[in-house]
Length: 117
Image (cartoon, rainbow, N blue to C red; front, side):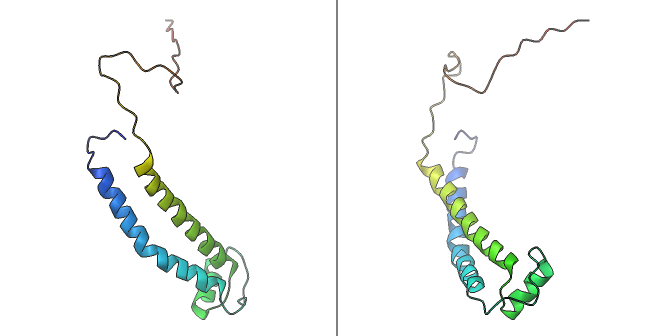
């Protein structure tokens, strides 16, 4: 990771880790509460946020709440893995500024362009 602010990366990772550590228990508790709700609510329209909110307030199950709970736990897991992976990913060394370009596979492909007037 080559930055003009190399000290910013570790600070942001520490901040992300702190935020994840604080919201993870709340998200998991909310997901568990959604899974353990009383029974299906009056309205079972899958994508109706009003019905989902009403079911949440009354402690009933709703398909949208189940989807949100499942995806929020998965999203936190992915974000945590990304934050942890940044520390373990080795940073490739930079080539010397006046040396030849690195050889090997690259996404850059030279395309010759001719302009005709």
